[in-house]
Length: 339
Image 1 (cartoon, rainbow, N blue to C red):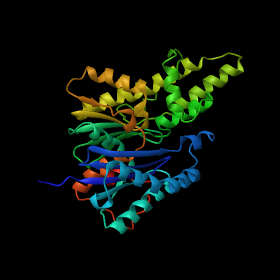
Image 2 (cartoon, one colour):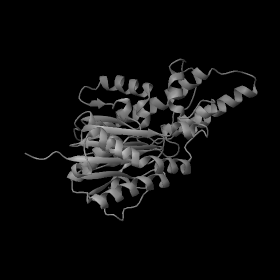
Image 3 (tube, helix red, strand yellow):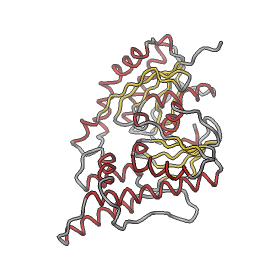
């Protein structure tokens, strides 16, 4: 009988220090996350140096808690999966350094994982992946459509040309003087308002699967400022609803078109903005009319950054024979198509 594969995952790409133990790439034994939101909130965004310092303070404790909650020791661990990139270089270095130190001291194989691959594989913690599949990745730094023909194979067919969706949400939220992170607050306001304001949809060239939200962000800011100059007051709820409607329409339409064109069996939603209620509802409604394509959306706790998703992706890469050397470095510009 084949032994269970036990993988320790470590994630420190931005402002969450996380460690997780996952069995066979899909069973979560522990998933510990130390969030830094309260520390960064007063600055209106993530401060890279502050994030790195918090990671240094938390990483040992988080790893120890993950082992304790899973009731395992380092001797039970078959591999260590760590986010190699992309992300904030100082933050990444903390996780990579910790993983390398453990791998060296305990003689455990090391596997570097792409952060976006982790978000995609968060879905495997809920359901088995059926190829070919398409993943819509929507987060603070990334908006991409990724085609997968098999495990470990990633082809980006569409990506953001400027602001990612999550980044646009945070900037619009800041304009409305909402707390950081802005996405959940915009989503809440959007459900209290009506999308009655005319805002642009950036479809780009015919047939393109790329995204652009910079123009939409600027249109929202200009709409608000122009109204203030005229002495008019725009409902924050209606502005949020109109902004969200524009973002969601583009994301949904391009995902549906790509899913049909590439003949996929599954569509997976991934990334922090996958927690957005409006986007989840729109995609669910759209794919209800396409019974031949399965839509899977991870639960909220697996949408935001966590280490279980890194362990899930690392487990599959380990099975495919990928190993990283102890000279592995943090790589903030890591290309998902080359892993």
